[in-house]
Length: 166
Image 1 (cartoon, rainbow, N blue to C red):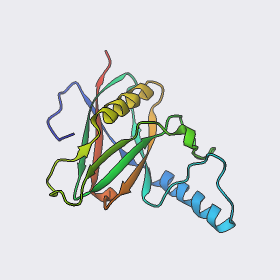
Image 2 (tube, rainbow, N blue to C red):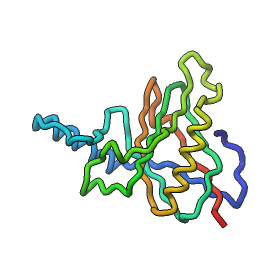
Image 3 (cartoon, helix red, strand yellow):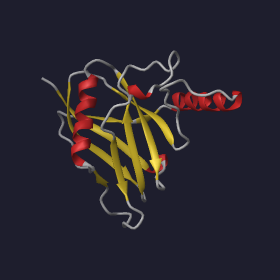
Image 4 (cartoon, helix red, strand yellow):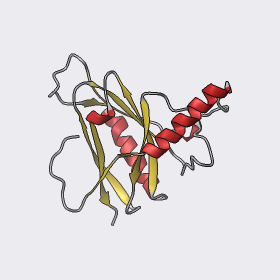
């Protein structure tokens, strides 16, 4: 969770915002609103406080080690993984494609800004292990990041550390 030095045999992957994909999903929402249509049964539309992020895997055989997460100020960030190799240009995002558990980090408004972030350790461990498992069959994985309670994307840094599977 902190920014300690990483051993040289580890791989730290940073979550990157996918601006084009986020915009495509926002256009889907506005198109439905303009035309007065409803979403497909089971379709997951992007909410205004959400963005699409991605992890690119240079190797597929990985073991989860730890999270690195930094949030300036207070707020809550929920990270939801998308399980299938989603092709947003061909298919809409469906709720059945969302992974559980989700990752959640937060700092309460009453907490000092330099206080450690809080998280649900067991859920974050399982979430990291699921990411490593899914990395075995793909080179990229997508995530929904939801910013709540004052959290903003500009104040966030998030990455995951893996060790290569030998």
